[in-house]
Length: 559
Image 1: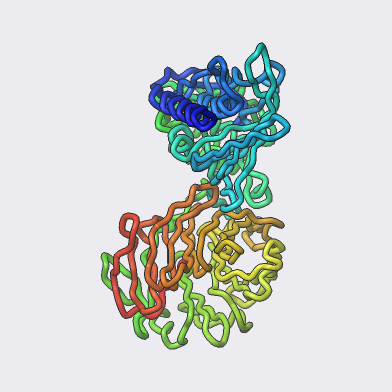
Image 2: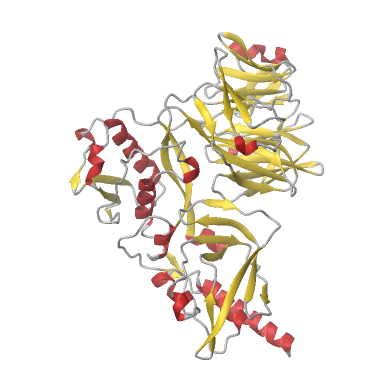
């Protein structure tokens, strides 16, 4: 009989979940003031609204806990249905906005001896109150404790973790990543990925997040053009005829022409992914600010990082254009003579940094410059300010950045102490650095910010780094794919697995290549290439790989 009741409860939960999904419908968007951060994402209706069921009479403790988790999918009326599962006093305290746990949907329940219940979550990622996502280390499940009490003869939750739990499919149905743009040294626009609920208030939340500035990790790396203390006058951004009406406080008028140009570029780029918006009108305290009224000099620039794969075939160095090898001319004709084990090109392919038995050397049309003679160097890196970066795998906590004239700067990276990276790469904008390292489970990719002075000279990296990817297998190689994503190569048996991850993004498995030894990215996944130990070059095709060329000596990287 006990087993029958357990099965009946399980069936009821499954039916409730099915009902929740089947009753999803298009909701009429509402408007109104919101506050910055994930807290406000709960207050306006979503384009896809889930109609949750409240607690049924006679529900068991497990039914109440599972019903509460399912009901929290619906944010309607400030999660009114989910709060029905809570004791009256706690219903006022529970904060669904603090975070979102994204899991695989399997949630074993345990009834504890003290009358509480524990839900075991196989979390894959966590989104904080500002919309930043970080992956959760695989293997160790998260245990969530729920205390229950009788209210009018029915079980209700007296204490529960703040935040909500969504399986991956549901999460990606009602939430989406958006790129918020801030400004780095050299007036370079740098994206920061935030997750927002897809709903009518999205323009308001994006503008509010911009006003809040870059996240804590990048606060010393990037800045915003908005003067400190700038706020939305009415607390919302209405849309009229497809144009966002952005009315900011009067201190916007304190912005210099350079800062105003940054503001306009930040708004334009950050709002471009909102489907309901095709432009914006900017005003301060109701007074329209026309672009011709202010000299928007020095508009911050977006990077043009579209690159063709580059490689060494015999003693010839060249690129792949339309599937064919095209030898490069000029200084590139001599690269094969150095017998390199790694080659990196700068952004416009006007210089190369190569590693061989003598260390790292820079080669360009002006000649050859020795950069770093140390042994045990990882593949070199270039940044957009023309520094060549080198790092010893055995002492990675100090990076070295060297100018063309040979002036070297030590760049502290304290987060790498005690770690032995297999590969390190700078993002195309030079504002982040990623390291591929091994761990007990396989491999991880850590990402830190790069702090620079106003001229772009590197000063240090951030004290800490975030683990942005966990993947199985021993670490092999790493490269960036655009400004926010990267491709990690890890070895599982004889196959090298490719995983596409990113800063604040959900990782995607991209299949494997037999004996994969090197990976090179570009500005898009279609530009990804993997070179096998046998010299076969593979191109990304769908979720797998297709051999494109053979007889390749070396696959180069950009940046």
